[in-house]
Image (cartoon, rainbow, N blue to C red):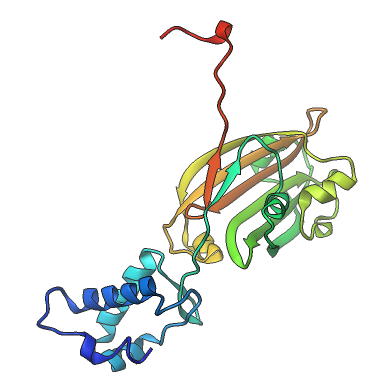
Length: 256
């Protein structure tokens, strides 16, 4: 680490501003493996002392690398090399839970719970779930992690009649519903691109404004009753969603 931030590496007479020299130097170390995922960088004041650069210069270089997702800053902890995330492809034709999807890939799953509670529904939840006046909901909010990497934030809302005690859900919501014969049989999903705000970016360990995928899912029982309204945010650098398309039957085609 001392060699990486040696003052000999920086020259005020060289081409390019000093913050850009430092930024490129750290980026080269990342690419070459000199800095590994999870490594903690020295504090800005220490880097400034080692390099002979001003703290303003050091801060600007660090901020540029955070903005591109190469470094991650954790409040009160420090600046770390970002974990490399393996891109995952998920088929949109299968109705599965996050736990089931990761299990099929042989990956470990951990839920970092933010909230499990009974609550009053928001207007859009009343509409989505078809609730009556005065009905309450079970609300689940958690960060879904696989192999130690946060991949998605899941915010699920269910009628309290279907999930009276949200604390029952420890890992898989669908597993709990299945024990009651309430596993969803079909769902409608809407996917849109989004930029992660400061709170969600912090939960997912990515820079504020990073690309994300917003998914709204309304799930139904075989009877047609709505069982779940879930809004999830997935890391844009970690997920690809794929769907199989088939040619329509001859009678449904329209001549172009």
